[in-house]
Amino acid sequence: PVTYVVMWIGSLALAGIPFFAGYYSKDAILEAAFASHSVVGLYAFVCGLVAAFLTAFYSWRLLIMTFHGKPRADHHTMEHVHESPAVMLIPLLLLSVGAVLAGAVFAPFFIGEHEHEFWNGAIFNGAHNHILHAMHEVPEWVPLAPTVIGVVGIALAYVMYMFAPGIPARLASSFRGIYLFLLNKWYFDELYDAIFVQPLRRLARQLWKVGDAQIIDGMPNGAAGLAAGVARGAVRLQTGRVANYAFTMIIGLVIFVSLFLIGR
Image: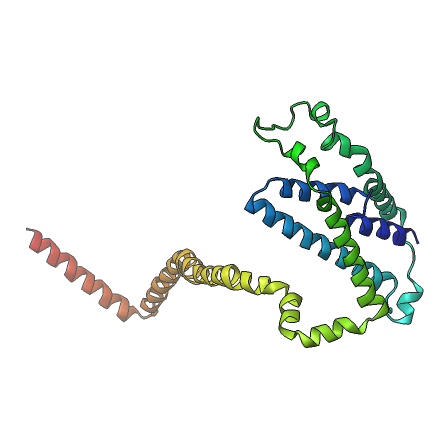
């Protein structure tokens, strides 16, 4: 039950519901983006609204499927489900307190009427940068929009995963391409693998085969092989027969005398 309550608090904060910490931070970002009156700012504002909707939707999807959905574990596993230990609950409780109170308590100091005294020059603000003032003068619908969109995301998650759980399967079947694209995370992992992982793996394999196996290992191994070959050749000369040794001595003597005579 404690985990369930703190999950509710965290989901409400993520969805940007009023008076939770996420409401103040999300509204501040969107209001500042809208107040910039630029193409980039408008783009950021629209993306922020889309993100607010998706965040509320997936937070409640997680909450509903985890605590209200049909269990997928076996009966033996479900019998051993229990509350989290204190080592996990204490951080969760501290985070939930921050999610409830941090925004309401600190918003006036971070971006409100006391921000000059609070920051005391710690954050540089250009002389022509009036965004902190302009963000408080945006139209009334601007700070209201993310809350409305968040509520819509929550309501849609309730409909799709609690009251009509067959809708997601039908949507996935009807829009198979989009479903697979999103299921595979925009194929980002495959793209990353093709651009970075595989080329670097091929390069590493070549460096291993040529640089390591042939050059680095080849130098000591080649020297050892040469020494072994010389030793094998010397072994062949050691026949153990006196006639072979005498013949070798005669050849050596002839060569020595020839060199001596040529030198004179």
